[in-house]
Length: 89
Image (cartoon, rainbow, N blue to C red; front, side, top):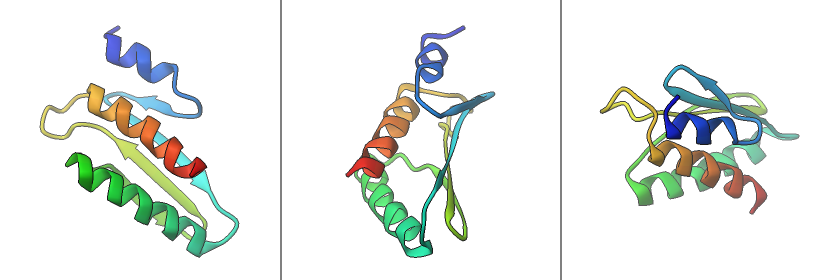
């Protein structure tokens, strides 16, 4: 297993699905999820590395992968960690 995938398995609550990291965040209110996505979008834009984001009422699913390389990279690990930090902020 690659070092990147080993690091991915250490992430709390993130699911490793092939070459993707996935996690669903649950919020009490719809607008809380939207605010979370806005903060995450600011981070992603600053890094020029963007996750897949799906909003379903109060659930926000985030998927990190490096589409250009068709594999999981260090940028995805950093993105997952940053996503958790955005949630805590």
